[in-house]
Length: 277
Image (cartoon, rainbow, N blue to C red; front, side):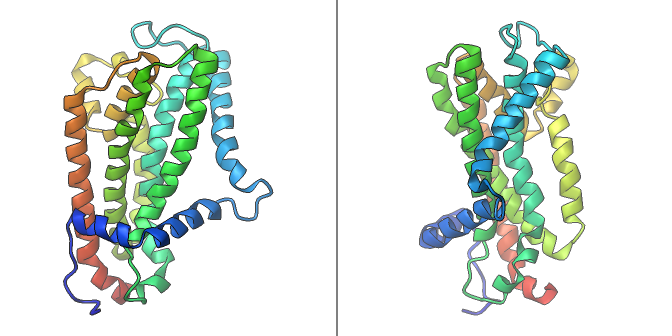
């Protein structure tokens, strides 16, 4: 295969590559997950302990130290509700943050793969998003267990959560593709995405409800893709509400558009990776 030949840039080609290299993708994703804990005594067990400890800390800090409460319109009154609500926001932010902060160094950190013409480089960002999905699934299970134990119960609306989180994963993948390519040519990208991850956290309703903001600025908050997912997930978990299907369809459209743009940029840029590296 000629490394400078035209490569397919559409999402169907990306899906076909993932299907063709499914076994390789599985192995690379597991390496990404297990590599984080390599050398530690507890190994993969940390993927369970970490969100458990986070939930315990949020419960103590927000329910005991600060005595934080949200208004009854935002969440039913309860000692642990604020901590659980914050945990939802942190969980969703973690998916996007892990993708955008890890992506700029993916190709740089795997320069040996660039020299192998037949290696499907487009899998590298997928492994990071896959690892983020793995950790998010564990954290979600712990969150739902916490709601059952501390909040009193769950409704059927939690079945909507996969459909809410999946477009966030697709959007994160699109950003990861684009940032992985950009990071090869612009080494400052990693520094920028680190700051961006923090900005996205505080400009999303992670530590506060949208209803706490003045009506004049609430609309601007929805420019952050995390806002829709966090608010809808909280509604499903704590209020038993189905998501707004029109907004969910719009979010899916945005996620697919970002994924297409990111994959297009990655495929168009990859022929120049070897020259830079």
